[in-house]
Length: 321
Image (cartoon, rainbow, N blue to C red; front, top):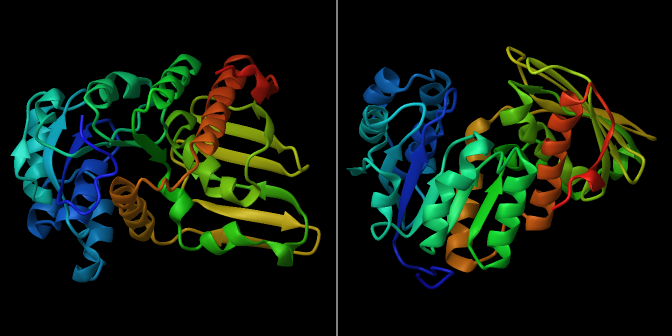
């Protein structure tokens, strides 16, 4: 077990993949290492990634003193996908088993968005004392949230977040919404499904209201969620979400005005998320309060529970951790 924080040492970071529909091993590794443009366009199965990478000035790539040096892909796709990512995103080492990284890297990124797998994927590294960044959502089940809380109390080092928290268009409203008056209603639409992208919709608006969500109701389906949240300050939040739905943003309505803000720069949000991960490795300063992450995970769980129980209103107090 190494000392933490890691201070100013050169950081060797491992990255884990792979889940269906999630290209983070390609894009996040490129943000650390730079990338081979020709291979990224050829090998990456997500055209949006080479598209937004190609729009960035060269100087925006790289994080001082940190590189993705090892990759392992298990689950949905295996070592052949890892080799593709490594070539495109300039990763030197491909390993067959995740545990092969232990002793070779200083930290690990779990770049998979299936919360049901994260306890199993992360346990070997946390047991070995390696600090981790775990992609959203951290979990989808109460028992897994209890496990991560237990690990936290034991001193294991990990952080988690959605990149939407770092959308530059939203950041000013995390500091103040005074010009809108008292907030009465927020709509936080999102693409894809609640199990994987619900946390994006939650976390992009969560810093505006802060801790204090009371209940969750999901009257939608697996394909199309319709989630209603109530905050203790009286503000109501709707999250319409669906497979095939486009776009993301936040509509805020208060007693004095309203505003709708769209997120237009995915690269900025992802890159800031990774910059803050490295800053945490060096300083120990967490970018997101863990208690906030716990409440957001309770919202994810409550949304699933409500859907399974025909749209019943689920109190967050029911999620016992």
